[in-house]
Length: 185
Image 1 (tube, one colour):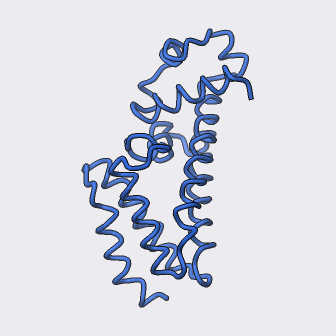
Image 2 (cartoon, rainbow, N blue to C red):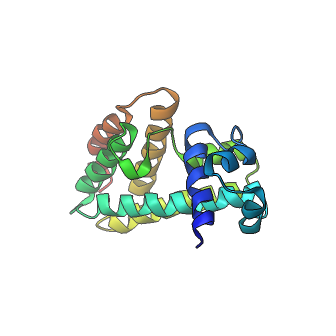
């Protein structure tokens, strides 16, 4: 990957995360990055192509971080602890590689895109499925009901932390899940 391409992705990732994909235009990405428009269009055929590249980058960063955080889990309850402690750190800006919390870039981008068939929405769905599969792999045994509950609580906590500025949403979700999970394990 060329340095200019990566600079464009990194710049757009920062801007899109902070302000959203619809409020940040290509000219702003170019101005902040210092890259020429011709170079941008050499690497990306459209703004949507740049957004998908940004989502791919964020996906890799997020999955790597989450894999590390879940690696210590020894059982299903410690998996819940690891996941929601990780989310709490993210919501409260204690994860430098994820930058300041502005909600989930995948949720935000899919909503802003508005078309569930566009590449942006499809990639957001792919990311959420990959996170679900990672959680599923860490369970002591296959348990569709438990993974559904964990993922729904995770998504709800993310939205609550962003929309309601409820930075304790992950910890409350963690406590609720630990009460509910034993009946599903």
